[in-house]
Amino acid sequence: MSEKDDSAICQACGACCAYDASWPRFSLESDAELALIPEAHINALQTGMRFEKGRCTALQGEVCEAVLCRIYAVRPIVCRDCLPGDDACNEARARYNMAALPPRPL
Image (tube, rainbow, N blue to C red):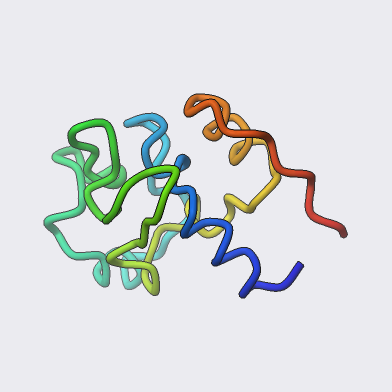
């Protein structure tokens, strides 16, 4: 599966961005990487993305239909690491009663 295929799957889902307020957290980002994320999307503790109304504030659109990330190019590592069909993806999809995706081929 290519990165383009992954993008299309994710843009029709968005469940990972609307799963849990503690999930879109910062982990291994450098100060320079964090500085690129608009402050309006960073939580009050500055430990992750702001989560309001059950979703990351950078998520635009309708979950399970059509979404996009307003900060896709500078999204946190945890967001970059969530891939279609991995455990985190399928756990989030299950919350929205979406079918699990098969794991990505290695």
